[in-house]
Image (cartoon, rainbow, N blue to C red; front, side, top):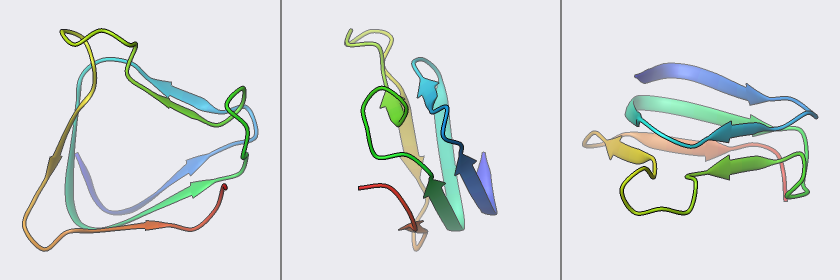
Length: 67
């Protein structure tokens, strides 16, 4: 669960391929890269294993970096 926080994705990137993210209140996502090699990958391409994002009412996502 991400709640009132900042998620920093470094220049090495991040992969979220399975599981669930619950987003509550204000969350800032700061991505320090803008390429697909070192950016953020969501899911693994299969319907059964892809990430599930649960956005609570009135939550906000602020993307402060990346392209």
